[in-house]
Image (cartoon, rainbow, N blue to C red; front, side):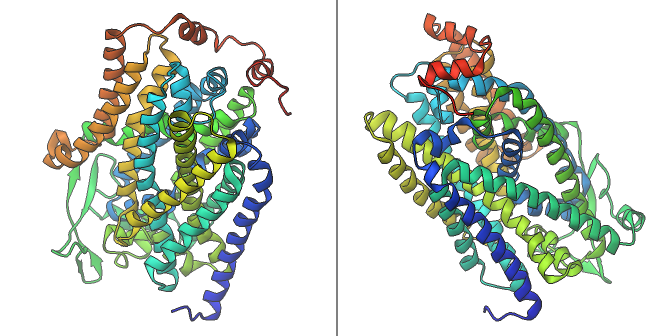
Length: 538
């Protein structure tokens, strides 16, 4: 199975170089990260703007950036993937603008919170840690699914490149992520995310330029795709004609398409609602909490939005140009998600191909490492120490965190075992769950002083339940009910927080005073010193 020709050997060599780099980074940060839970889970709040920005976006843009988005563009054309990316770009910008600075400041004032569930509990002075426990359980549920989507990417990559067994390679990639996350903690994850963010950007730009050159320019591609009904339209969606086996039909060497589906205003709103998910993404929000200074948020925001917009544009272009260059090679949506890999193999020298496809590993591994770390920190810090053993030492918390990493690893592998899983669909489900559970709560916590603990609990539970019910029971009804579950779940979550907060006793004066003053602190470092009772490292 592992017999390799010279070209494949060079590709494998490049990928091995990548693996060695990320593992080395993990071990470099091991000693510093294990000095305390604050260092292991949040890097001591000393991460600069470049690392913060690229780490946030690389951990957010998992395998769906280099496989899910190009695959969707290849299979269905511009509308679905286009409106999704517009929503994601808007959500990225608004999250950095509305949430980043406030969360950075409030997480320090609210008991120097080092996890997102911890911030929610401290924000409402929840001594019983009910809010944090519920939040940690939600993170555990949906991040197992998220990790699974990342492991699917690893398996598909090696299966597409070399024909190696999907399951074996999926487990191998999962173990690599587990190893460097367990050893190095937050600083390791952030540093590797920075490297991986750069690699993802490089890979996308190289492949899109190469594919344009292969196609003989954009004009040839546009002329070909214009003949596919609805493919280039933003108001309709191309519908591949498939047989009973789900494989697209081909006649005379050309793929067949049915009458395009209408892409109306409701569908556009539904698709763009992907952007709402950012307000509740723990892997992004924790980066806001760990940035070195709130004054550096603006720089990070600019870096992040440029990275996101350029990367998503390149991903869409790769999928669409790939349909022109290889119109009948990938005839299911699951297979279409390999278009980035196929193009890389076709156009690039073996070693460079290895470096470029390592961008896919970078995308999946950067996300999976964040999911593992956040889940481990939430369970260990907020359930183990917050509920069961309040006097637990940092060392005990770190041990529980690593046990949690192993559990999530196993469940993620279980989720990823089906090699026909469509990455885009798996990610969309977990994205909706986290976005609806935490997005409304994040915004209300930062902007409405009247929000109560009971309202926070109601909002999280409502968001989670509506996503599960809507996705599995209501969405299959179609029509107006076919909208993306994040939209109704997010709106109902907001409504639940508002109504329950008004119906329950107002927060105590101490909570109200803390809210009133958290944005008024003139000197951030003086505030940190007060909370930590000691000087802050530069």
